[in-house]
Length: 86
Image 1 (tube, rainbow, N blue to C red):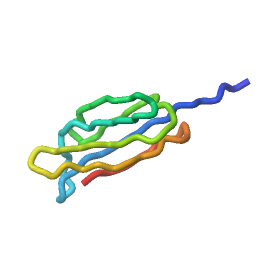
Image 2: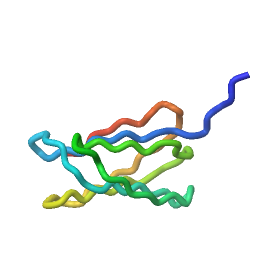
Image 3: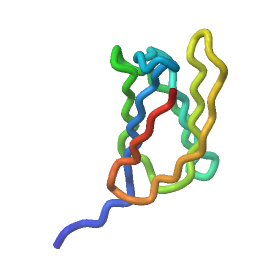
Image 4: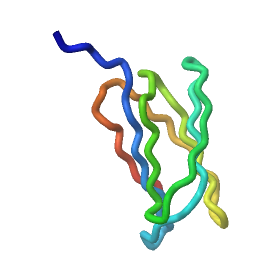
């Protein structure tokens, strides 16, 4: 018997307006899940939050020299939520 997963994944890439990768902190918050974590993007502007309980999260990104960006995302399946900021 296969076990059902109740966690998902969030994969993001952060770029500047010209498409170049940006190294910056990405903050992920869920009040309902009491989740608050910050990761730093790699040299490709990529970050991966794994094993996230299903729910609605707020993504906060404030790249150096750029305006702060915020967007809600909903994790509701084991398939990764993939997004790009930039």
